[in-house]
Image (tube, rainbow, N blue to C red; front, side):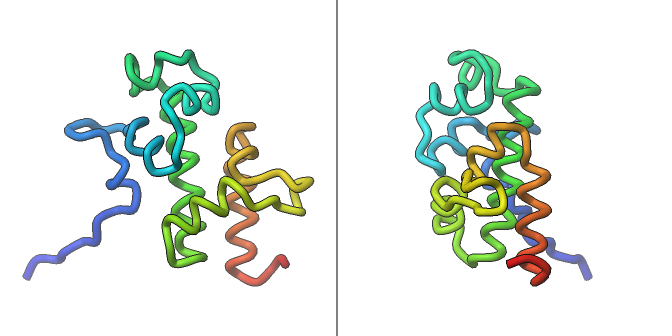
Length: 123
């Protein structure tokens, strides 16, 4: 008897037929234009369309998806999680949003914070 695995969370953001995340799909989901996505990832404005596999862009996209996955687990709703990620000021981080912290390269800190909230250790 074969085992059916649930589709991984990040799969919905995969660039069709490739092993990397789609800047367009992630941008659409979060409501970012391509140029905004490039600014957030600190890459040239053409990188998301010309070189979507660029390492720096992919790191930013992975970080966004990683934090979104945990926030979705907490809220039970992807769209609500995305809204909170972009708009909810986090007191523990000087009232910066998770989105701002990810842009600053601090996704691991956000993840640790969210996981502590889920475990009841903070808050």
